[in-house]
Length: 203
Image (cartoon, rainbow, N blue to C red; front, side, top):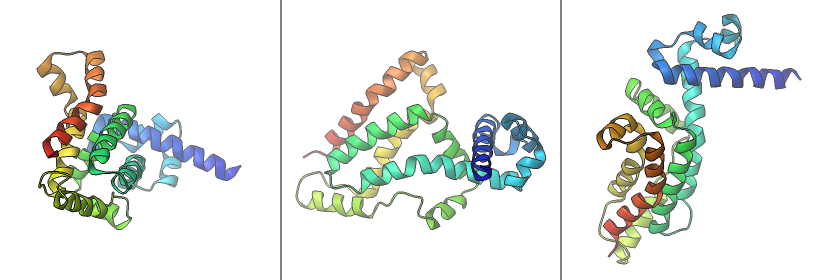
């Protein structure tokens, strides 16, 4: 029972911290504010996390760990590059639509603390691109797709899928659409992005 209570308290803390960090960033957030949001006292918060930095890193790892395994599975399965592009776009957009805070949260932390990504790499938390790189080279050699470096292809896939979520306010104002229409556009991008990339590499 004690372990279950500890897990529940920690979960409450992480959810509260996620909301505060998302709204105010690392520098603007206060431990007392997070404790209040979680419905606990500040001493209890410090019992679980000794500093704001440790709490922020825990929230970041928790958030990133939701997405990274899905991307890793897609990049390392036995499907073709074309199918990988389709699956990546569909799965990523579906996932981020359910966790809209995540892209800006990751970008915020990487800009604030670029060295933190090295910790993620050391813990094998990042998707592995080795198989994807080899597969792109093989499909180029066999004439299945146009000549393109795997790194460039991956950046294209990532950029076209990530940017609309990061730049949502800007895009909405530029194209003059409300939330509902924007969500419809995002849903359509599951196939629009995939088709755009596939057509750009198709022989």
